Length: 245
Length: 330
Image 1 (cartoon, rainbow over the protein chains, first blue to last red):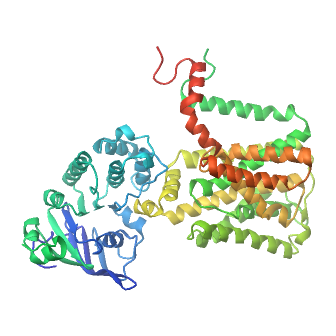
Image 2: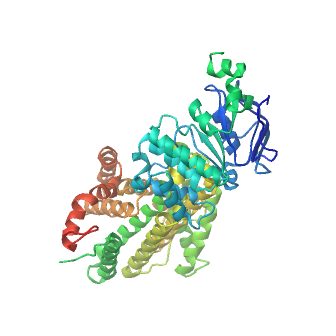
Image 3: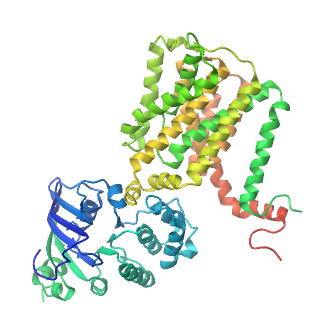
């Protein structure tokens, strides 16, 4: 990691020397990063640079070839996805991965089914209210609009009471109203102590929401720091934004 | 005049109570011929429900369910005949234990597979049991095993009724009304997402597989005692699973009452054909036609049709009967 603002000394997530190769493709090629407690870290980089693969590696959906992943003080590299989730890590997928044949409420309850089940109904109701999904509570997930599906997937992460949420392009292609709901929810959850690692291509959102930006390219972290520092970095401009200033 | 309560839950309970009362008095209102048909219908409704646990709720298409039906049947036959001569009620839990062990041994590796691979693996397991039971002396080989006859049609009717009622009660409680059911349906719809929600999908699948297998074994045990003679083809045969699959598809995959509707409908057609045309292959043609029609016109089965329409025609009729529905009329 080079230059810029560094995360807190006691990060909730730290990744060291993480490698994952798919044949000849180096999806993770020595990733080093950390996310501080109560921090909202943005993860940016060109398509195919390994951002979503990093999410899969951290959440246990894909096993790393080599490297260390520490979540909340515990080594979770190689641990199964459900065990990592039970430790308090939640994620969304780039393409919403909903339980299509279940209702919106059932989706939320299913997300809460493993863990703090007591009070799950109340939490589901609160999440519906937070994300303004009450009017579609009994609708099938497959019947929702694209934006509502993004909201619901985010809601599943919320209802789990996770301490770290990985959001994969959660506002991509959604209506400004839904985007506003998501951003307000993120801010409110951060106040409650939740940390976020957010993959996003929308620089406006990154600037407004994220405390710190992590830039990836070709399976590794290029740099990290405050938004203003990142946009002044010529390497980032060349590899990501494509127009050196 | 209010014939049924307005609350949908109470309405369902009243309808269920009517069904139970009708089924409860049936043995005293029909002769033995029709009682045997009713017993068979209850067995198929229960078997279809057992298949639906894994195939419908978890989305894992099991083409080897007859293996567990057959295991229950063979354990009962084996333990009731010489030299053991055990009482029938003792053999049912024994069959459940043997079936549960086999389901764990088979399910642990095969449930890592999905789709056609899982279907083929389970089908192969049933085929292995056919060959095994045909080759072994203690199973009676290809000739099968006879059981001591018990000529009491009402006993078998109520045994099947009890087993079917418990199977449906279990399905309702576990798959429709508990967080276990939420986990099962979540893994059916998106397994990686279910894992990401903290659900141990491998364990939940195995639990569902064992539950599905054990309930099928109970029907196998009662069936063996009822028909007093079994052989490998009659209890492990692939046509037994095929019928369960078609019954569930016809009735409604992943629904509570779909298997009962499909089971009773198809078994009824089977018996009608047998009555008018005898033992012909016509039923197989009916099965094939039913599959094609369901896939083309009723992807959610008869229960799905009912679900779709219940907000319309049925509710309107029932609301008229009960006077005022939810929300009330002036």
